[in-house]
Amino acid sequence: MTGRSFRMRRVRRLVPGARGAARGDRRRTQPKVVALGGGRGLSASLAALRRITGDLTAVVTVADDGGSSGRLRDELGVLPPGDLRKALAALCGDDDWGQTWARVIQHRFESHGDMHGHAVGNLLIVALWEQLGDPVQALDLVGKLLGAHGRVLPMSAVPLELQALVRGHDPAEPDAVTTVRGQATVALTPGEVQSVHVVPEDPPAVPEAVEAVLDADWVVLGPGSWFSSVIPHLLVPELLDALQETKARRVLSLNLAPQPGETEGFSPQRHLEVLARHAPKLALDVVLADEAAVPDRESLCDAAKRLGGTVELAPVAAQGSSATHDPELLAAAYDRIFRMHGRIGPWR
Image (cartoon, rainbow, N blue to C red; front, side, top):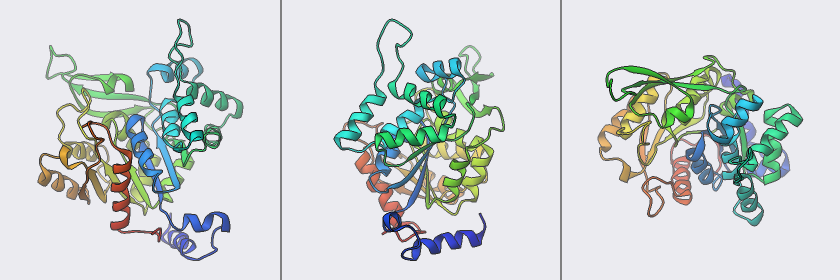
């Protein structure tokens, strides 16, 4: 995106009537936000972000190979729908319609046959993919049915296989480095994950996802499984280019606790160091963390500074849980960051 096109886009935000009357007033009062991730981490972020903006896009990993998603992927050759379904459920409203549909699409069948374990939403998404032949159009249609407060997009147009180099995967050989294949396996692998990559190595990004990142005011990366949900976005070249070139501010939202297996024993600052190894040119503006999850604030601030960012500490954990984000508290933290850190658009 050229400097001139960006300036023109900004002018259109500032000039009354530059957008349609029905949506222009609303869009000019809130930020355009793109959230990247997968699984429960992305769902937590979306449940918070939909409370503070109506201009929200989720860009979701497509490397899942376990459970219902893995079975549908293997049998039909489709993108794994599970993380896309979870994102749509997180965007459902808090009214009866939204919560009813959120429960329906998350419902899993229990049987002694082939339907056991399949989620209703997975089947609905795949059915529309087959009917329409367009993954983005189908997801938009599901979102419309649910009354979703935002849009859900896959990060790549093809299903990906995640592979990790793991030191000490075999306890009998603690110094040996082994290649571990499959997102479900990587997420729970014993040993220390050194790096991850995807197959195919140069996957095509979904154009709408790239466009959303380039046109955003804020991009939010994380929280979520670091190697299997967060970093994979940096392994899609066109998407990484967009993340590096966008004029949007970038927020990295850290997990509340290390994930058993995948990031066991990781400090908050080590999460940043791992991210930087996979995308050395990616700069950050803000790193969001829960103060209770940061034993060494100075080291985290130093790590954030090396990536061009500052640290914001806020209470974002749910009461009674040290590993689950509270959507209201997380929304308040995001809202404060959007207000205080270099607003691009006049959404307040």
